[in-house]
Length: 170
Image (cartoon, rainbow, N blue to C red):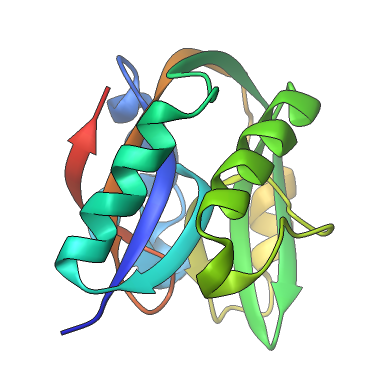
């Protein structure tokens, strides 16, 4: 059986801070809600594999030169519409380091998805929304950047990219 996996960075200490922020948007949220349907995370790469392949890919990631942890500040609250779905998310600093991490993982899992994506967009999604006024909600929300150490992990992912379950972490 094939599963959807996610090699991601998860907050070591401040997951509750991201969930608390996401709760401000629950009244306009759709199915994706950090703290309900997803754990807070920054995706490095998703892939489909059976259980044994997922374990092999994780071992290869761990044996690579990838950083096992990185301190990030989530510096900007933002929103975007893609494929008629509205997303509210946080943008991290250190984008160059995150792109490097993404490329290491994508190269390892390359047989499944190809080389690293030029359009990789590091972010931490808070919620999705069907509301037409979702961007107004974002603009009205006061936001103080959140800094935390993020650790490398492997988890199972849902169809919307929600991080459902941690399988391995550093």
